[in-house]
Image (cartoon, rainbow, N blue to C red; front, side, top):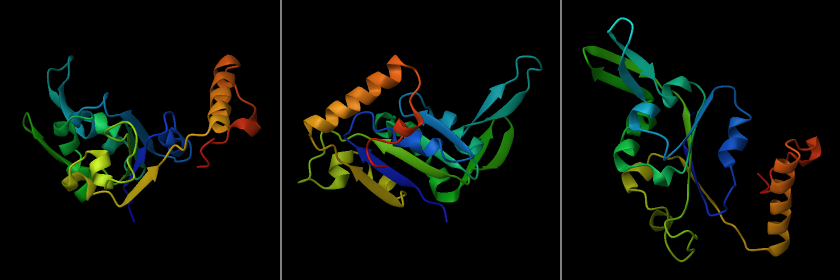
Length: 183
């Protein structure tokens, strides 16, 4: 069974995608801002040496039978989000460009992380209103996780110290490699 969860987090630096990528064999990670529709699916590129057109696999094809993690999913343009509809529905990528016709396997789970529209999750509003993604796309996700950041001075100080330690010494002790968010 393939799952496509969407995690909505207001906690900066929660890095759920990093946690998942570290634990799966086949994966591809990308960000909403740094991804295009063809970068997620497949592209037809011209070979500079031969002048012939060839297919270049995108993240979903490269992660066949694995996990594709997309951070900042809410920052992705609408046109680029539409490109992954087929991946989420059919688990394939169909390409018909430059005389090339192909159907590529993209049997992968998709984990996408997004931030609330207004920066903070409003518990009085529906999840759809907080996320700001169209229902046609949200309905393709099997699970929706909402990760809330409760304001706690001691916990925030612990997270800040952890981040500073990890950058200062460039390596953490094995006991401190756990996720501070209880994931």
